[in-house]
Image (tube, rainbow, N blue to C red; front, side, top):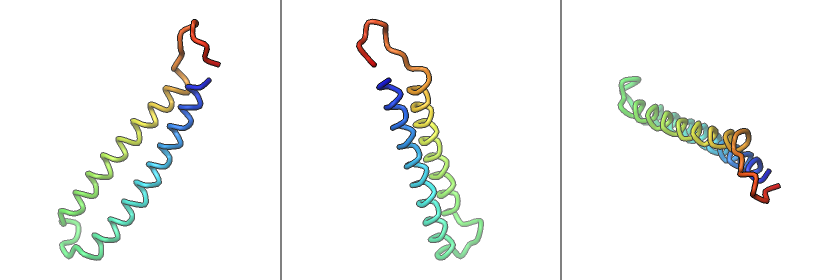
Length: 82
């Protein structure tokens, strides 16, 4: 049971990471729109896409860990876990 609680905590952390990704990406997009005069060919857009993809990958990894803890993690029968 404790692993399920830990799994829900990990999913909460993943949701927090998702919110941070969304707000950071939105802020960076606004900064690039204001400062880059090259349009879509500006190298800053590639950097934003790369950083967003990496952070979404990390978030998905954390979600997988949380789901694993909730649904699949089982301790041995000899443990005193409730």
